[in-house]
Image 1 (tube, rainbow, N blue to C red):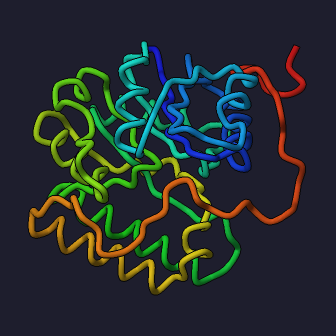
Image 2: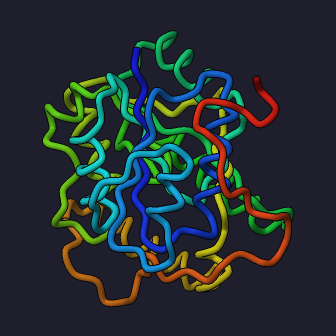
Length: 254
């Protein structure tokens, strides 16, 4: 099975290198990585190309994911956001569990890239919600969705008219034509930058507002609030950001 990783981006030069290095270190490396860029002004496309990724024009997340899927050659599409950091065995374990359970579209449990107890509690509550609803009303964070290409094409991809909850809409439609599940053998570490920028409770209110619309079956094509895409602050100064590493060859490999 050929695996294509698709990453929608807009001004992600501070985060994307960490993800590309994590993908290069996978015990089962992806066969291709496609970055669908929405017009970055911080050098994101050049950085992605330097790491061996293919860059295609993108847009908002749904638009970028669809554009990446159209360019992809893989039998399995893996949609990730630039601010996740999968462990080296992520793809290997995810593919195995998908095959063992006969699943066609999946997400996985999440964990915050933060040591703060409140952040961990928030993500564990979200994990419990994903698990509780997986057979009733599927949910999936857009930063981690794996799907068989044939199923993606059968449902027409992501609904590009939606401004929020397009990921939930996507897996709900996919679940009508294939088997959906939440993977439990792997977790996807994700940054908490949105929580840090907006505050936990204001962000929770936005998510609850979106959830109410999903439960009511009301597509979100208008927002009464701002939901940033590509306008995040850079991460705190810390470890040096890797600049270049050929995809599929971990550092130190011959």
